[in-house]
Image 1: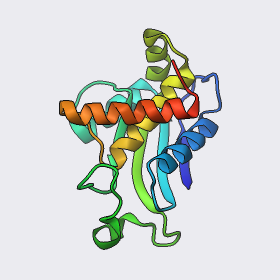
Image 2: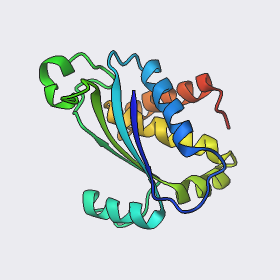
Image 3: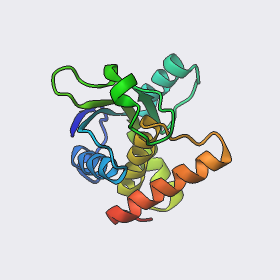
Length: 165
């Protein structure tokens, strides 16, 4: 598993953001039964930068907590079977790893939402990574049934990792 981690966030989080991201990424992909070694890029930034990215990429003029930019369109959430036939462009040409996509997280929102929801910044950060990884493999929450399945996966992963509220 390869995590391309970059931090532009100038404030300090009360944990090692790269180390936590690596653990959550590896655990989540194993939990989902991903049959491939995978690669993901994660940018930790601030509200101003994520606002700009959200405006440019999604035409939404506000900061958000996390953005996910998947490399593939999954027919069925979390089902990797189609990739070998249809997803050749989703594999790194040199390493053979599955390219999942990009994640952008606002460190400002991690701290704000942790306080607002009454849990630790570590739990919020881990939650946002799991949430985004699920988006990268086809999960969504636009419809009620989709949201229930995604929320259950998120809760199961975090609970299995011992990261609770």
